Amino acid sequence: MRSPLFIAAMTGGHPETLQINAVLADAAEHYGLGMGVGSQRAALENPALENSFSVVREHATLRHSSCKPRAVQLRDAWHRVGRPCR
Image: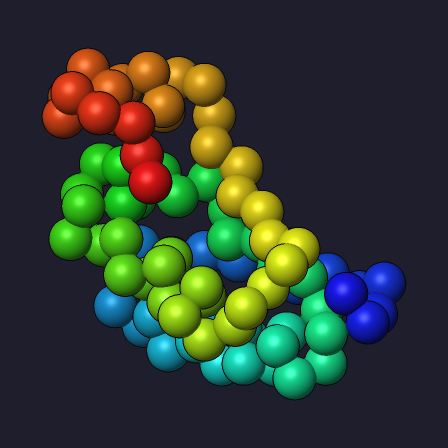
């Protein structure tokens, strides 16, 4: 990171957030910021929404990124689909 600023806990899981997260990831890449994408709960519950989160990695090489899944969400996803989230 070239800056101490961090774009924190942005959301996904809605069609309009794909473009928002893409623009924010582009800004993070340009200015050397870190970026977080929230819990990713929507993608755990509906894999078709995964791209609204993964778009961040597609638009930025972010060495400092985060997500904040909750243990219960990971457990439920594991039982629902038989594998952990990506």
